[in-house]
Image (cartoon, rainbow, N blue to C red; front, side):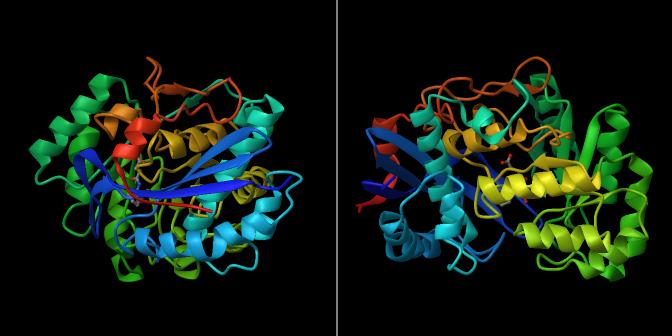
Length: 367
Ligand code: NPG
C-alpha cells in the first residue's frame, strides 16, 4: 500500500499546570501531529517532542525538520504491506526516534482502521482496561506536594510517581509514604544522580517503592548495573532504553529490574512490542511511560499497555490531568478502579477534533 497524502503539524497546547522534572519544566505540549491518508482511510499519530532537548536530544524544531525533509519523503516512496514495515523504512535514519514514532503510530492506526480492528487487538493486546497512575512533578514544598498527591488520590489514582532530584528526594518520599501507607509509590530522577549518590539513593529502600526510575545518566547502562547491586528497590530504566538492542544489553548486564516502555522513545509500537516480548521472556515486568501526550498519542500508549507483560500501572493518566480541552472528542476518563478503558472500535479510537486541532496548530505542511 502506498501512502497518498501526509499532513504534519507542529502544535502548542498548554497544560493545566506546568510540569517540573529534575532538570526542566514543561508548560505546554509541543508535539508534531501526523495525519496519513491511504486507500480511503486516515491514520493519526503524535511525536511527543518537547520545546527543548532536555529529556532526549530531540525538540519540536529538530523533529519538524526531520519530519518534512527526511521521514515523510521516505514514507511516500515506500510500499507498506503491514505497519511493522515503517520501522524498516526508517531503519536508515539514525536516532530521531520520537520524530519517527508519530508516523509509525499513524501507520498502525491506518492499518487497524482499514482492517476494522482495534489497535489493541492488532498489537496482540489482551486487556479491556489498563492500570494507570499519575506522575507528580517537583513541588515547591512538602505541604503543596501532599495537597497535590491528595487531590490525585481523591480523583481515584492508586499509583503515584514522584519526580525527585538532589534536595527533593528522601523527605518528600517519606512524607507521601507516611500519609498513604498503602499507596503504590515510585520515584523518577530523570538522570540527575551519579554513582557517588549510591548510599543516599539506598535510603529510598525504606519506603517500599515499586521502583526507582532512571537515577543515572540518560545514556548509561553500565553504572546502573553497578547501582542496582547496591539497592534493594528495583531500578527501572527509561531514557537509556532507546531500542530493543538497548533493552537486551540492560537485561544481559542486569542493569534494572523493570523497564519503562515509551513507544515514542524507541521509534514506535513495533520496537516497543519487541522490548515487551523480550522482557516477558526474561521475567522482567514492564509498564507504559508517558510524555504528556494529547489524546492522539495517549491512544497509542493505551493500546500498547493492553499487552500481557505490562504488569505495572502506566504513566497514562486521564486527559483532564493534562489539558482543559484535549485534541480528541472522546478524551480518556479515569475508571473507579484506577484504569483507563482500551478503545474497542477500529484503529486507535482517537476521534480527532479537527477544528480544535487547527486552532492550536502553529505550522502545517502537506506532502
Ligand atoms: O503522565 O505523560 C505523563 C507524564 C509522565 O513523568 C512523566 N513523564 O520522564 O517519564 C518522564 C516524564 C516526562 C515528562 C518526560 C515530560 C519528558 C517530558
